[in-house]
Length: 118
Picture 1 (cartoon, rainbow, N blue to C red):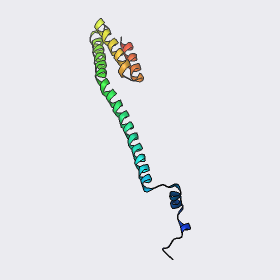
Picture 2: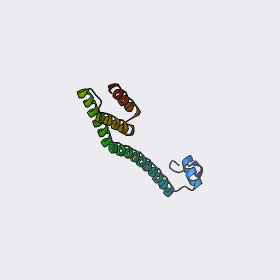
Picture 3: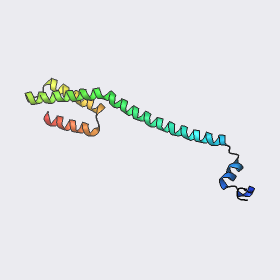
Picture 4: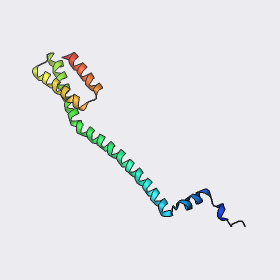
């Protein structure tokens, strides 16, 4: 009597599985599908992070060039006290590059300091 079960005493889950015809193969397929979705989501996240990192690496040379132009222009202004054509070209190049490679806050700061000095 202890180990014998009546047909009506099956658990609700067992009755549900039997009633819908879900087999072990179906359960495995569902778990594999869920795993695939998780892997796909992780791949998208990694791809977006890689894209961002690649963009930052590509802009690194332009950032360095903008900083060098600005540094040379400010050096010219400190040394000569005058804004020569060469100095103004460097300032303009730094400003042009800054629109491509720096955030709005950095550009505003560069423009503010450049125009105060020039």
